[in-house]
Image (cartoon, rainbow, N blue to C red):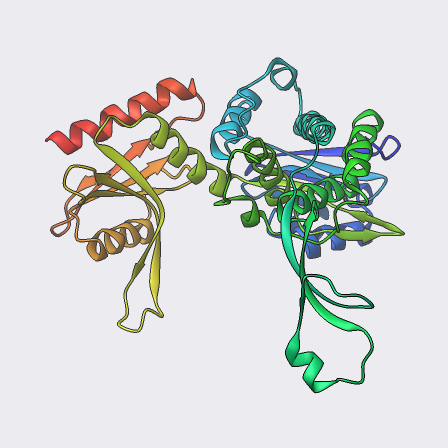
Length: 400
């Protein structure tokens, strides 16, 4: 990594580790608590902890460069190969498990290699020429260009310069601005090797001078319009979305800005299940993702339902699917009540809670007119087989 030999503390998902009080300087413990309290439960040395630090990873995986001397690696419970497959599906990266990524031994290594792939792909596009489009501008010019703004001319006839409205064929458009912002963010992350950082800098320089740097949220990378001239931007924006969505809150150490790499496993599980089902559901079925269901007349209140299974022939909702990235012995009353409420608002009688591993005490109950069941997309096994098992299970319930 770009920082010289930091000490790395490894934390496994939902597992606690204890460290002597002197192991972690208090100011760094405070920084971890204040900046990454959602990702790591930080319990300070005290009598209940035996005067030690107790740190517990909270369902996130990734890499936190807390300082130049101390980094945290949040490791997943599932195998890295399965995690990489989930990311490939969920973010439509279209890298399809290439050998270079399959050999990664850690998440920071995966980040580094994926960043290198993005940098090289952007340079390839730069050699062909970045996509350009006509953009409308308005500016005061000493000469006429396209069209004069008559309103401005009437209001200030004494001005010599003409307020012109014109179009310019430019590469400074969102398609390219998203690429530049992502490269800029990766370059500040402190997670790339010197070799990959060189690729990122070179690809950034390809855009520099053509494109302005401005921040973009991850959702700017989706639901974009592609056509013959910019079709090859779609996989580039998919990669950008991945990097922007996994970039946690930055923090300052000295004169450096640290940007961690953090994956919300709950969100990833939901995205992955949705994309897997969309690719593999039998003909006649489709999945709606993040369906918004309004529950007030003024449309101020609504439910955001994870997944809705729809029968294409009738257009009716067959069942509600709610993903839960946790491993309890049995579903909680709150989860059951939530999924029943979802089904009620969508006028369907079937609700399914999907977990990443088999529960000790799953349910198959009908407390009212809505049947609630538990299903499994087992992340510890072969993902393709686990997905087929899930579809078979759901199909058998739909046919019953």
